[in-house]
Amino acid sequence: MAIEDEIINISDLDIGTEILQTDKLLIETNSGTKLLDFKDFVIGIDNISFYHLISARGDVTDITDTETVIGHTGGAFELLTTGTALEHKPNYEDLKGTIELTKRNNEAVTQFASVSAAITQNTGDIQNILSTISRIQNSLETESYADFTPGKTIAVSVKRSYYSNNKIVGNGELYLNGSATLEILDDVQGVAPSTELIKIAPKLSTDEEAGTTKSVNFKVSNILSHTVNNSGLGIPFNRIDIDPRKSNFISVFSEAPFSMTYPSDGTYASSLISFSVYLKIHILTGTNNAVSLIPAWITKSASGGGGGVVREAFGTKRGDNLIFDFNFVDTVLPGETISLKYGVNGAHILPLSYFSGIRQS
Image (cartoon, rainbow, N blue to C red; front, side, top):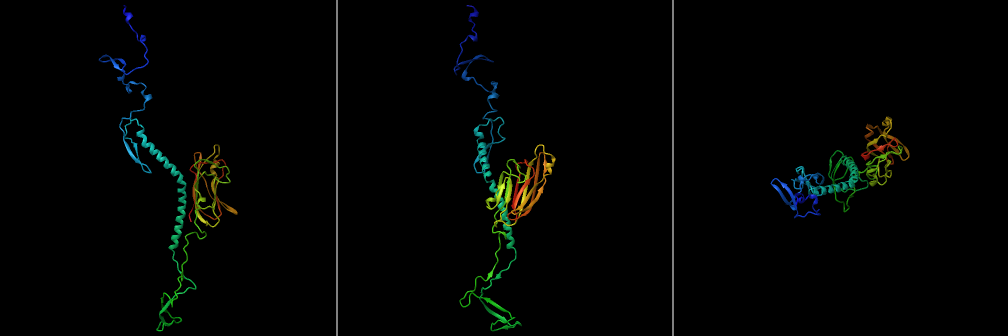
């Protein structure tokens, strides 16, 4: 038989359909050609050319370092720190603390958002309380006198009496133009003296013109851009931070466009109101520079008419925006309406803009 007949090419071998652990691999080593059980064939990062496509950096056995953080409502959370090896591949156990703390913080933010309006409302009410306390303090520290009540009686006995020349009288009689020493008695012949002899005027703790100090504070703001559709009516806002209707149901109030009518039913007296304005207004594309010369203004009008502009301010140009930032204090009478206006239809009132009015006294 020729040698060529004994040659078997790999292509002549039967095609297998699987590799079992007991199957052999033929390998060439430094110490010769050997057989290797397939179960002993190890695949690692050094002999896989596409390792970077199927695996993240590192593995879970590298060094980790954690710190314990206490949540706002309690509970401890283990978080990885910068002391953790850069090559460490985190698993869920490593990230569990961060995930749970993030969920807890999200709940806290949601709860805070739900009470933020109440916090702001309370801030305004506190201003009214401080104003009332100041009036009470001034009243208590002011010298006052008590008056005898006409028609009331007092029981006394004469201890000494004198003639007009200050000569003492032994019989206890009282003399015209003379003087006497009297002693207060519990009663005279079983008749008790009046218990309403002296009258002390009340110290008012509320406004003299009003029977209550209900809050009329307001604050409105924009969390989204809002457009001036009618410059004659007022600037629109889309969030109410302090609603005057919650503490004074007589207040007539609208946030878009803004207007505020102060009560005229006796629950509100003429007061000093501190107004604060911050407006960020986007200048329309193609608008000329004359727009920067148009002010924002506050108007005040009575129910019977009259009134007008009480304060105006000009904006500072910042890129494509105008910034209006001003404060002032003015007296507002019962029944007067306050409006904040800007005379350009189509102007965009940007987020963070706000208008507030806090009662001072």
